[in-house]
Length: 86
Image (cartoon, rainbow, N blue to C red; front, side, top):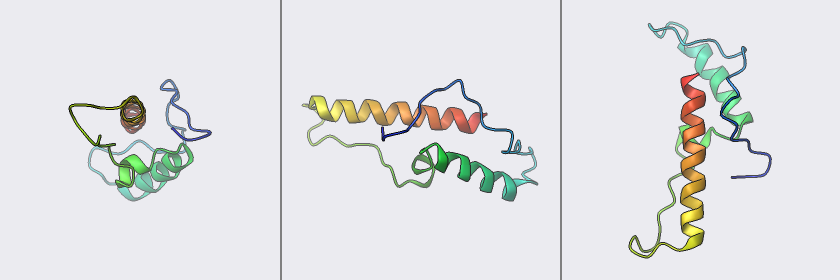
C-alpha cells in the first residue's frame, strides 16, 4: 500500500461516476469516470494489470515480507473490486 492510499471500504464511488447501464449504452462515459476515480484512489493498477500479484521466491517457504506483500495486494484487490461493484 502506497502513501496516501485508502482502504476504507465504506466509501462508495462519487456521484460523478454514472451507474453503468445493463445494456452498456453509457460504457464510454462510465469507463472514463471510473478510471479517473480509480487513479485518484491509487487502485487503477489493479484494473490495467500493471500491479501484479506478488509471487514468492519459494512457495513452500514464504518469508514474512513476502506474506506481508501478498496480504497487502489481496486487501487492495478486494477494495478495488468493491469499488467496481458500487
